[in-house]
Amino acid sequence: MITVDDVTIGYGNIAGLTAVDAVSLTINDNEILGIAGESGSGKSTLMRAVYGDFSTGLRIRSGSIRGRFTDPRTGAVLESDSRDFPRLWWDQISYVPQGSMSVLNPLMKVEQQVIDGLPARERGNDRRALRARIARFLEGFGLPETVLDAFPHQLSGGMRQRVLVAIAAFVNPRLILADEPTTALDVVVQKKILLMMVEIQRRLRNSLVLVSHDLGVHYQITDRLAVMYRGKIVEVGRTRDIFANPRHDYTKALIAALPRLGGERARAGKEAAL
Amino acid sequence: MRRLTSFFEDAPFRLYLGLFLVVVFVIVGGILPWLAPTDPLEWYQSPRNQAPSWAHVLGTTSLGQDVFWLLTWALRNSLMLGLVVAFFSTLIGVFLGLAAGYAGGLLDRVLSFFMDALLCIPTLPILILMAALFGGQLALPAICVLLILFNWPYPARQVRAVALTMREREFVNVAWFSGESRVRILTRHIFPYIAGWSAANFINTVLVGIATESALAVIGLSSAQQATLGTMIYWAIQYQALLAQRYVWIGAPVVSIVLMFIGLFLVSSGLSMRSAERRMSV
Image (cartoon, rainbow over all chains, first blue to last red; front, side, top):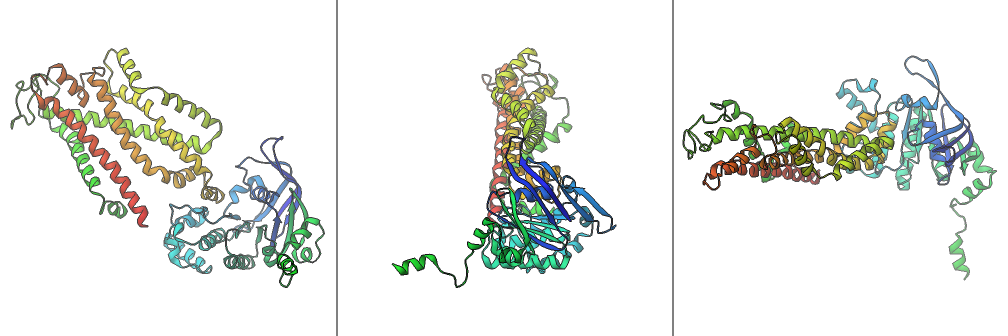
């Protein structure tokens, strides 16, 4: 679906910062791809480039990002460079941003924001029918219809994040990019939202790219995993294989850092020894 | 429409009082001038120096003009000047401020340079200079243009600051990601944040426009051939209305200006109180 071919991405002019360094990656149809890595490793930059948002001074220095999409109505195959992706936004590709607290406009009711994001072909329909469809869709996420008439500050963080996922999924996109969608949430809500996203992916049989620094999240839901470290992808493969047999030192360190049930509690052990 | 009427239910008293005053002035200045029996600017249409009576509600001037009908004309011209100046300065200011703040880069630097330059220039001395150059015959449209030129940078500068912070808000990013155009983002996501402020700025600029024109007229620098609140005061002073104890003549425009200012101020502060209440109650 998306082929990232030996791409180097930086900010500003040639002398500026290089955030992603000679990365190659494929995003296949019908899979959940995880991207793991520490802060500043280039995860979000790569996501922005794949999404085709070059409004923030992002530059592709070399290499290319190409996508193949099938138009759902005509069935025509559309192949294009990520620079041309903006016209596919919120139609073929959608994006779940990070940080649920500030991503909804505080002055607009939820219904208006859901409708605003829709492509023109959806918006032209009868308003009442559209609202009913959105309400039914939200119900699948455990959100009552009253959410549509609420302002964002009247919803909890988890509800807001679910609204965002719902907005991103409502148009049945072929590719959903989720940039740390569960970072600010507690683990129970986090799990609920992740399961919801898996369910959507299984139903639509599309591609979901999940960026997270939390390996536990990747272990739970992703099919394939790419580990980024200092602007490079150091390891990529089936998630199960990577967890069973990590090859790169950084991946080993990450997996070793996960808390284990029944594992030794270093501090408690030391205190007992004293 | 229902939202509009509910906005005025249980509003603070000052909003009602302010609206009442403004409506009175709009009626006096907007409708009554059409009903004037004679052209009140024409001299010696009425007996001179009359005290208030049924025939001449506010008496007549030493030039044989009816004070009441003269006042309606003056109010019309002053209100029109204030509204035109306020409308265009707010429109230009908000538009250019949004453009500068949201687009950034070279456009921002060029626009900011002009805003800062115009803000630094003291308005009244320049206007006095211009008026003196025109030989004290500055017509109303010319004053309008000058006032707009000097008043748009105030809203522009403040709107630019708001737009700068809005550009970095996450929900503006999300709107951009969901494929909304820049114009749509500006109008739907950023403008609502400054709409209330723009209304307050509009009212404030009406006051500034009327006050500046009156100041010019009183010192005799705008064309005295047109009726405005300022020129009425100018003529009254010229003919020693105070010494002659013709208090109604000089008092009418002064009281009108004061009441109009109070009315507009009450509307402005009442509106902001009302919207603050609504914010709390949601």
